[in-house]
Image 1 (cartoon, rainbow, N blue to C red):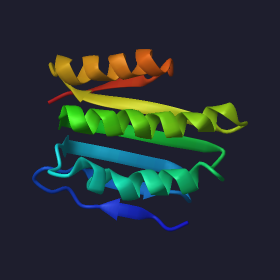
Image 2: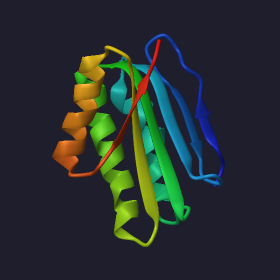
Image 3: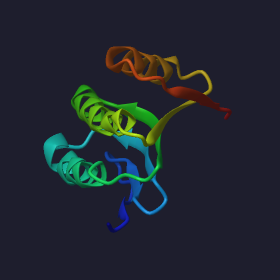
Length: 126
């Protein structure tokens, strides 16, 4: 599987999906004009990855902002990734938030609770 990257743009986040090292990182702002078109290749890559994941996969989510439409795709993405934990493989979800950004922290806590998946919450000091 090839490494998949997307450079950050004004309305879309940076993305790194590295199957060889089991690292998936999304960082920045997510409010693309067409959320379905933006997240479609990402979700397709994840569908392929979860068929044969690394023994350990790290999902690093470092959002500074995301809109409602993006939150639905983020939820879908995490649900797909959660299937890794149903095998003998391990998934670690790191939810990064900037110091004082309670909205981002609470969004992560809400996702963790809804999905019943533990996240590691990591504060980034400014």
